[in-house]
Image: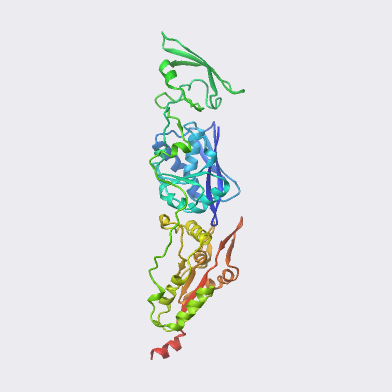
Length: 446
């Protein structure tokens, strides 16, 4: 038995569509996830198993194989939990999703079935829109972020138990027809003979060619009258009638009526709330003139002077005289912060203010440029279209300062790994401050 859902992962700061394929086969009960998953994805087996059981469903006692395609792309994170869970439920016949090809599934599952937000939802949803998806199902905590992308409808739920139930929730009592491996779905029921006196019936079903099906015996009259479902139902075997879970038809139309928030379109707001304004500076006319020129042409600048003269104070107010980001720049910057997990308040819309990053002088080269097993954006990328401020420049290590050469020249950062090379944007204004050498500083003090 085979099923497929759609999810996504991050590749640098871009989203990549991932097909979550589920296969159920006879054998010892075990679950394997293949397709270059990391540790967080491998551990999804236990999260999904507990969530499925705690929400009243049945986890298949079969050999379950989960493939994340394309298989040659390294995946990480917990965003596949929801797609794996719904894929297992649909493949095992406990859930029917006619519109699964049009729906992107993103979310991490807790053991009780609740959904937790994940990072990088914005670039994933943007990639889904480019791929032609019409809707996305995310945790409620990610709904505002996903809604920043126009042209795709966002549905949000807080718990796996919020999935809607159709009018017919019974399962056809045909567990004795054949084993699960012999019957995949019922196409039509031709004849039905009801024994009014004995209360038992015999049914004959016409199934696809090649499926060996026997006649059902000892089915009560009430079961026959109550189990007329308008959609195909996968047959489960070996379960008593009281243990058989309900079949649910999950469509996008049903999702519109669940008790959850639905976000549509793009919510873009201006971010004009600067805590430190350039107009607060009194005097320092020559420095203010230099900062104005640097802001007008995005020129790099360094301020040198004794402690307490206002170097840090002036540079921290430099973003207030920079123009706001346009639409394309705003989306680009917001995607970087989303991929890095630093998008704190998506309800206010896309980031419109220029980023201002001021790393400590103990930062490593990987923290400044970006890195990791699957590289993440560093400070130079988080400062894209904004300002990177290095306070007390001589305190930074030489290795850290040396790695700034290539981003300053090429305006991008390229990080190569054995399997792939990742490119992050890094177009920023470099602003530095430093004190004079100790001998000159000593003379000024005395």
